[in-house]
Amino acid sequence: MVLLKNFTPRLYQSNILKGCIDKNCLVILPTGIGKTAIALLLVIERLNKFKNSKALLCSPTKPLCQQHQETFKAHTDIDKCLISLYTGLTQANKRAKIFSENKIIIATPQTIESDLLNNRINLNDFSVLIIDEAHRSRMKYANTMVAKKYIETAENPRILALTASPGNTKEKINEICSNLFIEEVEIRTDEDDDVKPYMQKKSIEFINIELENEIKKICDLLKIVYNDKLSYLKKIGFTKPTSLINKKDLLLLQKQFQKELSKRNPSAFFGISLTAQLLKLSHLIELTETQGLKPLKNFLDKLKTEQTKAAKIITNTKDILEVYKITQTLIENKVLHPKLDKLKEIIKEQFLSNNSSKMIIFANYRDTIEELLENIKEIENCHPVKLIGHKKGITQKQQLETIKNFESGLYNCIITTSIGEEGLSIGTLDIAIFYDNVPSAIRKIQREGRVARTKPGKIIYLVAKNTRDSAYYWKSKRDEKTMKKTIANIKTNFEKQQSLANFTKNESNNRL
Image 1 (cartoon, helix red, strand yellow):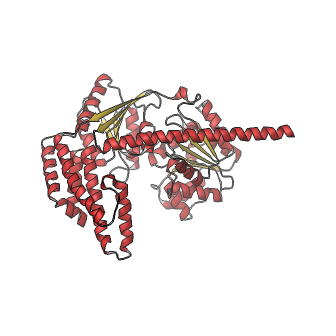
Image 2 (spheres, rainbow, N blue to C red; image 1 turned 90 degrees about the vertical axis):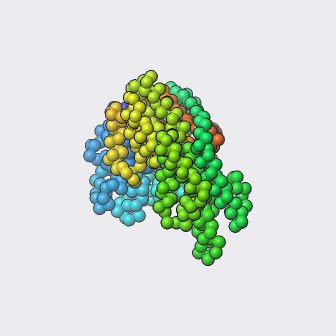
Image 3 (cartoon, helix red, strand yellow; image 1 turned 120 degrees about the vertical axis):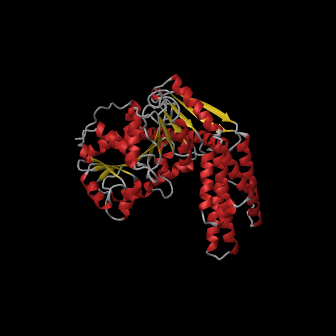
């Protein structure tokens, strides 16, 4: 018999578990209040009910998988050797043995999907499948294939899906439910009586930052070139007003032109090059407005080395040559983006007032991370480290070492890309700083969820005034509000359905 150890479930966790025992369930809970604990409880229940069965937990990143493995080792009496990580870092010919010999498998869904497609493994003796960060279970993401195969082959299937941010529309949430064969939805918000006592206070500070005149000049030059290129879209039949065209439109348009290539449409080549130019220019504007001068220069240098027609046209444009010249001069004069100046000021004040502080800084791009690290490490009492994805420049082992060294106190400031947003429980953070902003409500919620997990925390938004920074901030805020309304409506409708079902059941019993 599998036993729970060193952990006492909270009342809402036990109540939610009841809804997960007999039906495939989607659990929507605020960040930082113990979704993994519900997975732990259900795994124990299923392994005890089906004595010779196994459990599979799918989580999107390797550091997250590592954290789950540590949780299951710490809070069950299962032999630690039987709780195994299963990721792409293990050679394929060794993975099948790990899969067959262990009791609890904690894996990235992509690895499971790959091995299922290659018939290296099967899921017939797994009595429970946990899908962590279930908001990813849309369209062609690996979770959907794994869940389908699991339902088709497992002798005693049960699925538990976990998320804090399912999506901002009913349609998106329904898609997740459909893809994961969900039969029941358990929802708690920070306003529920049984959850409220465990919610830590988050203070929010919004800092509007005015761009320097020289940076505004760079933006103006880039926008002249960008708008000039946009005007060509009308000439090839694109009717949407140019002021409303965004990156998403350009990507869709590029795909359409690529399809036209197969039809030998002569304007397709021009269209593909034009959209490529516009996407590159759009990125240059974003870097200038929201990131920094060094990331801007690095991207311009990269364009100079590219052999594509689009890159050559851009880098030989008069206004772009002027942009490069101004950028180079500003960097030589040690001019920083005003957001970086403000960031340094905030960090200095924080460590001056509390030298035991721990903070996390979010930025979208690796070049930005490097510039932030270079400047922040000069600040007294601040010991920064970067945490980035493993595809370039850092291994999984280094990622895990970084997190452990941060938690041990070797570092007190972690600067991270999206790898640090999702699910990770990174020490006891006092403050989170959004160096840039994201248009996604899901990413906003995930970022905010890194603080105030065990104690009150603070979130600071740095927003470059009248730029994409501002647009992204307000979009994610609106979408988050919509998401909360959608979740509340689903919760209300679900409770009504349950009440009706109970009433019908009682009426039937009374007639008997």
